[in-house]
Image 1 (tube, rainbow, N blue to C red):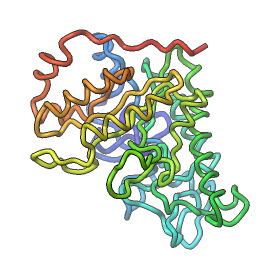
Image 2 (cartoon, rainbow, N blue to C red):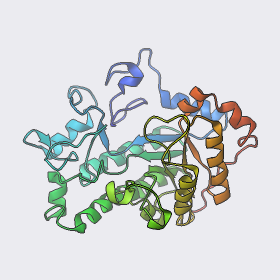
Image 3 (tube, rainbow, N blue to C red):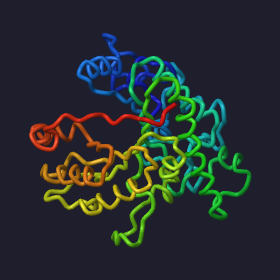
Image 4 (cartoon, rainbow, N blue to C red):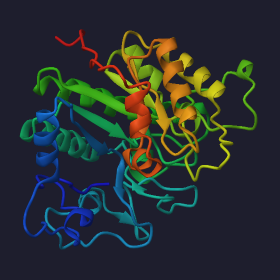
Length: 339
């Protein structure tokens, strides 16, 4: 969300580190540098997290424009101006207002915005000994976004007249993912580029999923299967877990059976890239986590991810992992396709 949890290069300090937005912690310390040092001492990889298309995490109050480095929100205004008080390069809703449910987001149609993101990724992998770059929120905010003025001018025709605009928006996201792969990953040997992606790419009616679940492809213009097919991502992690509070007893939409279906769907089109499916950490019983890990291994994924550490800690699941499905040492898979 355009803040830094490390010594800033291009974006201001996060208030979550120092207590004050844009100010360094006192005494000064660098969370990312410390994590790399401690993790590497234990043989653990560190993949730097980028909250990609998000610009700010407050829907009502923009960031302080006096903070240095200048907040991205204000950089986008300087570059692209505003219309009726609305920044032209932010993602808009259907009424011409900033679309914001949890974050304000920028439009990937802005070359300036894309260049900034690539510069941040470059800064991270050249200043820190990270093993990978992990992209989250590399998607639009929702189906109704975004006919902002920057996008409309770049598209060169009316928005939403036919499917052409939706296809064009997917191409903006695809282009950004590809730019990270082409421009950033070669800067460091064996650097991974990974992304957290929507759990459902496109619904297959044969699955019999109830309701009308949202699709990454249709509702967020995120075509993660194209990234696999194009060979410009090293791994994806479909986020197949509840987005809100867990229920006890467990009654999530994402049952083990549906989880398995979606993982198999991605694995079938992996194109040799790594599918590392997400598993929620807040199930009422550890059996739910263990069942999904077992299914991932049966399907043949490169691994799995658990979201999040906080959930595992709160539920005291570490001993069950260590004494069960994590009893044997895991080996990080090797990327063989990099030049």
